[in-house]
Image (cartoon, rainbow, N blue to C red):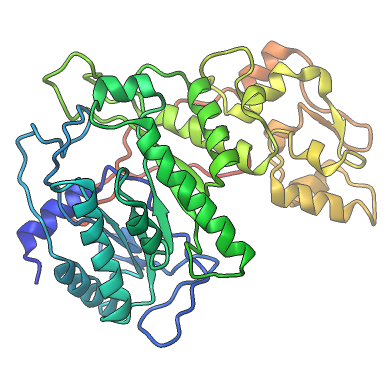
Length: 416
């Protein structure tokens, strides 16, 4: 059984990989323990209120690579640990039976070499499925450079796989992670996309039912928001990714001048996630989101910033505007746009109706008319002033099984 010391090391070492959302899948749960749901897996809560759904752990943090930005790099003097496949399997089953978790996110540093590491990861998920009968959610981190046969076989046992692109350009990889290459990362990503496509054509739901994801570190290198968003758009288009995750760089190496010495902060990460949402669900292109600027406006969410650059398209009449136009109005999201389109078939809407539909009128009022009435500001500077958001408090951190319960969490919600 995995002892507490190694468990602490391996879970703490895994917290920097954020591409581990518990989105669930449609994998069959018959004949085993645990299950997954297309709508997402269940969550549990610790005594101090933290939500735990996936056991997030590394198989090993002993890495042969020396990526400057990584806490697990070969040259870093940190405690090292390695678990066996059976130890991981036993831990998952014991945690599941105690209702601590509903699934597993399993990753690893490159231990010895890519193939050896991937063999261990594959052995773990195969034993978990076949020997232990676990049918819960498994997100497996693929190892770039590993043999394609190992990766393809893993895709039949994991619900989701991820190959982290880590840095947005080949130039940055060569500077900060010279042992890695963009081609080595994109090749398995493309192979998984093809495997996923063929499986869906054959109606085989056993191959990566939850698809694949990737992660980029933001701020460790000099790429602009525009470069990052354009890359994300290309990844979605080419590899049919479910998500691109963005992780603000946290200083992990003070021995080099090639990396920032202070944290990048979460505001930039937050804006990138908002832009990513517009890419995936609102029909925006990368060029529309960025405009003529190189970086996103830190004071405004990307949808508001786009609207201010295109004031000539507004105001729009909510009683007649097409759904795709309504979605581009700040303060109107998918649910409220759907409610508007449904309700206006029966009667003309007014501002009170929009308020009941939870349209964020303090944003939307500057871009819409309702029954011909307009209550917003016409002056661009005045609208910008009213829409400007305060910078997010930089007090959030990623949850850890062993961190202090005194974590100050802030949550932002609402329609874009």
